[in-house]
Image (tube, rainbow, N blue to C red; front, side, top):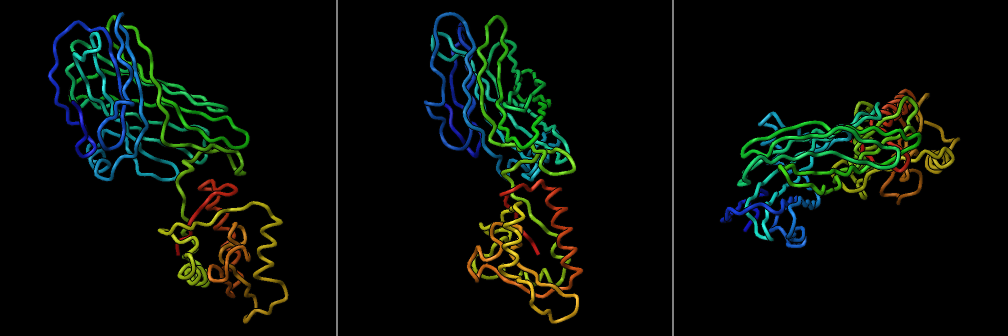
Length: 346
């Protein structure tokens, strides 16, 4: 039988040496005992290869530290342009429905995007925990994606106890607007003399590519919420933001669950600003201007949220102009599109 201990397989099984009739590959993820529903049906008759794939899972912090120390595996931290996901797999050799050999694999995908490129990649490492499969066994992994996205490349290597192999899967998205990709991986075991029926599994990560930001097309891992940090350098604006974030629902404060959401509709942005910073108000000092938080360019701007979640302050006009430039730079760097969430740290 097979079960999980600390996210890895511990396997106890006695195997009889019989002629091979079926090779089965099962890829499972997450903690807990592997369920019977995740396993493919037993096949009898002519020799064949059957694969079934379960869902992916994120690596734990402990696993990431181990992989980082190892040095050879690409398993980056989750950011706007990188991520890591993992699958644990089982290859079984069956004869008339009875297992005669097993191999236990781990697949680690290191995702990388570029905010100024349509290309993104998955660096794949395949580790073999152990194997009792007689004879040479290998696996090939390729990828598919849909719509304006195309995939290329394949990673092939031997399944050898204690061994590993790696390679890169490439993706390109030709969208002229925006397109969200969720890659499909195709796994094909290789065993001499046995035909293969590939199995497929869908990535847990989505990559969004767009051409909506003016300077160039680019791609991000859109499930990651970026944080704007440069407001901290604008003294009076930072004080206003910190004051608002300290009360109410702490809108936009990192670590809380209420980010801001960008809006691109100029009519709405202008309306938000008029609601809280109407024209005609006299500043306390010459050249000072009304500053609002949440920003007018967010769905939470103006009077969209209760009074305890918003605030205004008089700030130097130079800070106001710097704020606009820093916010635009952040939007371009992180490809923050309409309705995208982000945090503000001061």
